[in-house]
Image (tube, rainbow, N blue to C red; front, side):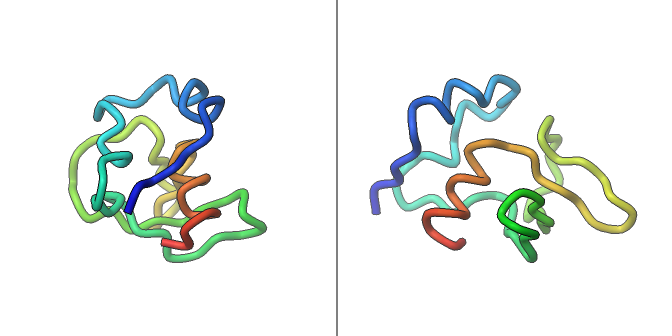
Length: 78
């Protein structure tokens, strides 16, 4: 499946340290959205323990602030 993300969203993702690897064909995001609140706050469970500038600790959970991850979830619900 070809993942399509708006160019403005990609340009807004200035802190990505993973070279936008989430945009590669057939690649699942490294963090799974477990719950989304009004499509603005995304609670995630990360599958890898690597550092991400967009992941913020929130108690025992994590919130994702990555513009690409948010759009990916909104479009593809995964």
